[in-house]
Amino acid sequence: MNKPEHKEDWEDCPLFAPDGATIPKLEEGDAEHVSSALGALSHLLHDEESAEERSELLRDEGNRHFKRGKVGYKTAIHKYNAAIEAAKDIPDVLGPAYLNRAMAEYKLGNCGRALKDVEHCLRLTPSNIKAHYRAILCAMILEKHDVANRHIKQGLELSKGNAGDTHLFQTQRKIVEAKIEKQRRMNEARKSRESERQKERDSVAVMMEKRRIKCGAPLFAQQRRYTTSKAYREQGEWLWPVLLIYPDEVVECEMGDQSDYLEGVSEQVCMDEMIRQVFEYRPEWDVNRRYASVETLEVRYRRRWTRSIEELDEDSEDFCGSCLGQDEVGDWVSVQGNVTLGEVLERKDYIIPFFPVLYVVPKGVRLR
View 1 (cartoon, rainbow, N blue to C red):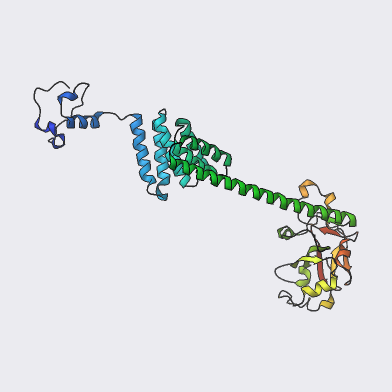
View 2 (cartoon, helix red, strand yellow; view 1 turned 180 degrees about the vertical axis):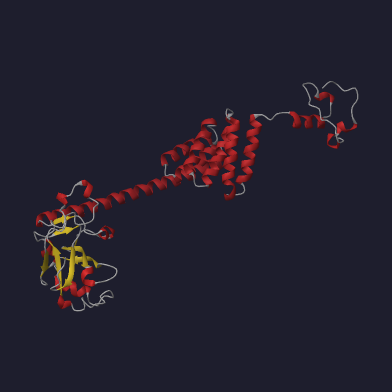
């Protein structure tokens, strides 16, 4: 644009330019010949924005969406993504964009992504004290206490001379120390519980080996669902969980086999006493009254109805069932009413299927 021989009236106030008027593109040195308003409008219309300006505009858009709260966080992240892409090699612009995106991710609960963005921001702008503080928040949620402590230390160095910032980092240090101590106590308690459980398992194993009690795979999947599946000692007496089965062929119930799970049964209890305790009241499923009289019931088990632990391979550890073919399973054995649970468990032909299982049937009934 050369110096005009005459100036239009609207050039001093270009917003009132008439229809059809052209706003000129100014070349270097032209600004001194036109009004400041016309020069600003010309730059606005014709100049291309820089990468820095583009990134800042996108980041501002992201901030507006962020201020909308939860509904705006995802859109804000998209804008911050674009701002980061636009800035590329401009650290002073990239740092704030990464930090803004980190905060949006943090609000959405994506603390891993947030921490990664904060660390990226700090590589670009190491003295960004706000980034160190946000890194601490993310690291604490992720239980990365060593990372939190590192940023607390750096934050305290940067905040020297600023009482407010120093107080914030000192507060976070106390919180992290308290969390570490709590975690230490929890770990000690967990190790103590595991040690006690191991002692119980060892004592059970020693007792069973001494008495030559054999244990094998469970017969039913439901056995693995019970919380107590091992014997335990209480006041010098061994107590066992026991599963009593009432077979479908006797019960004749549409729902199949019925059962009762008994927890903490003393080894000293005899079969008749156990049956009387269970059938104090007639069960609803006994529609044919096969279990109406305790005196007519007896306890049975099958010889070798599952493999012993020693015979199981690694692939069979989670197996439920007899693990034996029909021709390998032994005969049914009736147990006299005055025989105790402990005496049954010590029998050479009884293998405990995970924990003691016994069938209760009317006397004289023939089982398949």
